[in-house]
Image (tube, rainbow, N blue to C red):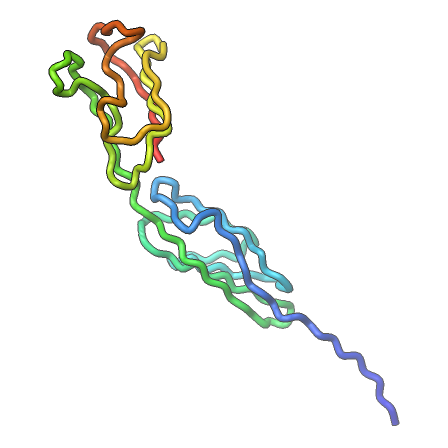
Length: 173
């Protein structure tokens, strides 16, 4: 007697995911994850915060600095699972300071306004200063922090400006 039976082979799941960065700042605390798993139909994400998700490509928000091993469990239709872990570091915000008063009178005390920062600020992408009517009176691009002479000396078109209120925009990295 011959018995003909078919055997179906189901591939094991393979868990994998991508992250946009392995380090983020607490000020930019929303993080997107890209599921790259194969042969899986359901997923469980563990963010090491007490929060989990079954979304395919979740977005997670961290509220405290620290090291978070993110785990993705991928399951096939038979319940077989695989897991992948990637650590994410959430850093405290970069510290920087821009004085709100300066005295550009050439006595070498508070003669310039610039960006002062801690060691994690690599560069100032830009610093723009505007008068009360919105006219740009100063711009500097791509310079290191903590060097007053690279900031604004209180002049516009090589002439000292009158004391007034000015606004600024700065981007730091």
